[in-house]
Length: 207
Image (cartoon, rainbow, N blue to C red; front, side, top):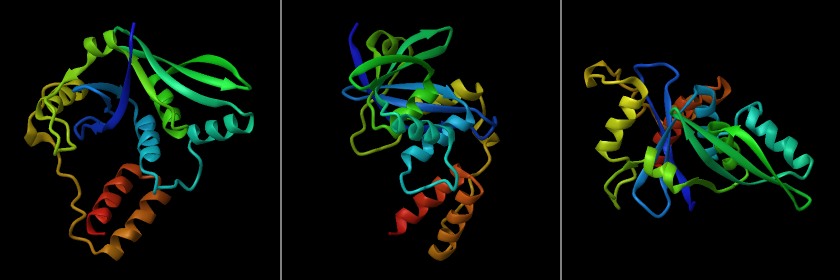
């Protein structure tokens, strides 16, 4: 079976159901997206790894694992999503120490959080991508998922919901740049990482 490399497209979350998130992986040389439901903690850990500018005041569990692994010269070489059973994805972390390779079973969310911290590639098998992937039209000038993918992901997370039931996100555009920077510091200290990411995006727009 052939392996397909995946890149992280982003994290989609529903504001109508607390704790429901989907990690969106995209086929590197194709137009399929692979949504994987993950928990809130794992979503935050992955978001932190993606947003290099946000440094939590205390190490997260995956940061601790990386420090521990590096102390003993263990390197994560790659992550493979190798099985899909009853809607659950199973993954393996391929590690290496002193030239000896080891395969460790892991939850997919944990495996990807570690892959990001070690700059390790993420793969899955083509038959898994064909079975669980969402095919979307390529839009070279847009970074967002297509409307079709958004609909499928939202249904995956919360079922069929009406747009009017979704609360409005906090509008950070009304704040000054100075206020935003202070809010960003406070959000990181309070470990409100999703809020911190949104504030950082607003700051980036103005710089």
